[in-house]
Image (tube, rainbow, N blue to C red; front, top):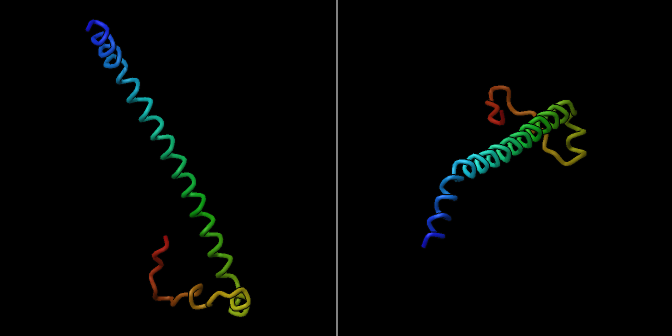
Length: 80
């Protein structure tokens, strides 16, 4: 039974270190996901600007409805 008590004390003693290590891993994963999201958002903004610069004919040539790219001026842009 003495060995079990030693085992428990050792794990309790290192519990804060394990918690901090896991919290650090979670923060690192979260930061990477946020960076990926920001890059995707910037790319989407660039793509939208490129499409908005095209004429209706160019958009039809690539199979995109111009009404989806050039919304009505009074419409709220919910993509931001």
